[in-house]
Image 1 (cartoon, rainbow, N blue to C red):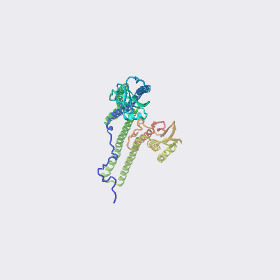
Image 2: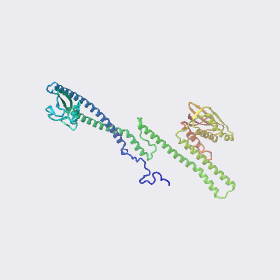
Image 3: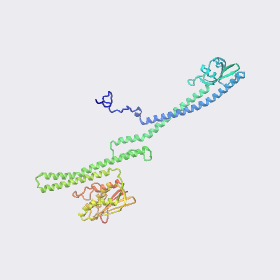
Image 4: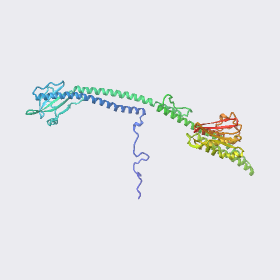
Length: 473
């Protein structure tokens, strides 16, 4: 028989709750400002109580030393009077005494004490053993006008043993301590109130930017383009840096949304024409019976449009990927090997047109992402072969920590009005749709250069057109 799984069928078992059963404390529902004020108040309370306790202890210690000194001197005078058989001395103001037998019976006492017994049986037993007993009678609070501090010691006389009890009133000492307690309580209360107020104002001032950021973020939910959090320009604290970070995040989100919008717009715009041509070819083919040669021509036209769709889709996806890349993966690569490996696949196509591809590349090392540099350079070579004439010259040099890749042809160059828009998406010098290409090659090359922190530029020279990628390496 198989034992049931742990927890299976257990009455009252709750699914989805943590085993510890820990619940969020009520403090987590309190606003942060109030929590900070409570924390400041708690910390200040500990500090103030500690400081007040230390001050009270030091003052009490000083008062007790003075009182104990007077009490010891008075007790010594009383013992001397007994051993010298002289009258009891007149002690300081507030002093009283008793002469007690070991059984507790009072033999002599000051008028203020008369026959009141100050010592307990335990005190008498301790004094009988030779100990000196000292303790207080009456409490500090509530006020006790008969509060005393007494000191009892044993005195051996010829033929008998007596106990001398010297006592001092604590009225002045207790009054000073009570006054000190009142002043400390008032000072601590005012200090705690002031520190709580300062803590509250400081917390509000510190968290004020956070609340402003929250309100601005709520307004951003309406997707107002270009709206950013109000970050002060004259500060450089943690909250200011947080604001800059959030604004940077908003910039990246807006860029991503813009890239997505452009991608959808470009795709819908550019894919519409080949799809319409495909539909037209198929409609014509289905409209009436056709010969095998006509069907072959139709299929060839359809194949060309499908290939154009594939090339356009791949170009759009590549451009979107490099545009969304936050940083490229730079690795050391040999520039000459990189350029020659990129150029070689185009030599066959160039040979068909009786055109030459010449490479002038330095054998140096550059830190770039060859995964993106290779297709970007390939697009420049392909453009030169498609739209230029004559030989194509590819140069690669490294100067001052920058890699410069140039592709030049011997054609007529770019039309003057086209140069400012040469790297725009779908920008083409020829407006005819029959010309091969999608108008994304230069845009892709420029995006690769930008992802490396570089730039791309196109120029016309006396020999033809030249496009250069200038990339830090």
